[in-house]
Image (cartoon, rainbow, N blue to C red; front, side):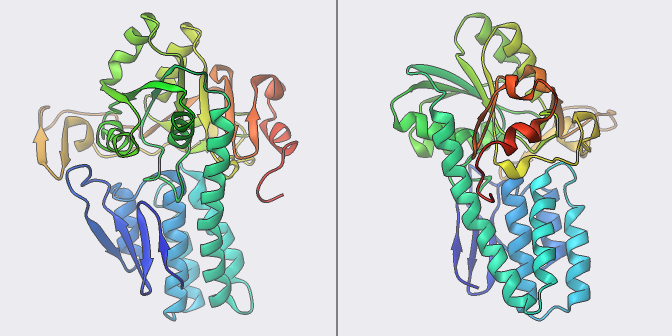
Length: 349
């Protein structure tokens, strides 16, 4: 396969490497990914993360395994194993469905390589379109708030919500970005703060619990977040804490935007209640770990509740910014998000 270079994935000399996002920002460490078991471990440990990037890493690895001569039966099993690695992010399932179709082709080895590379190229294009579409809705002088990480670390391109922030910054529209730390794994503090700094976008890092006071003081003009899955009715699953921000934004009459590719939409999922929510380890709540080491602050035997995502109802969302354009609440008042999206041009149309 040809060389692939993204912020967090590299494919060269027929080997896949991932940037260990658990080591950032203190270390930039590239890890090899040679088999399905290894990739599943990287995904579950969030060394590779972000809905689009998870799907791309799985697609590239499957294509590499096909080129190395893994039998068709074992490739089918590999597809099933990878599907279960993270249940909430629908991009993984969508990408693997396309790889499964390629596996059914007569020249399946070449077809899978072509499809995996096509998915990478498409994601870059989708990110650029989201950035362009979203920047139109950012007003000059904006102070924006974002949650979790949605940039080049999580995609093959400029990102989703952070892509919008970058494009708006390039247009001179952003005064400042408020970055939620994003407990419990601190993707905002570790990843988004680092990315915005690298991009030269002015930001200030805050604890998640500070967002309400900022809004009350009139210091937030809009909230921009990403999505791991958009249900048929427009409900959105995203990193835990997103729903809280949506409620706060609604109360303070602040626009709340979701930026995502159309591939994050799941027409077979009727609403947010049907989205599977991943439950993660107690250790993520009782302490913290990274390249700096580990720290336990809660009692060792403290019982925890640790869902990785929450669901924001469509009624709290001001607009869904996709690669095909902005979808407004008025367009989905009948609860059929697919109908509104289908009326717009998409990459696959």
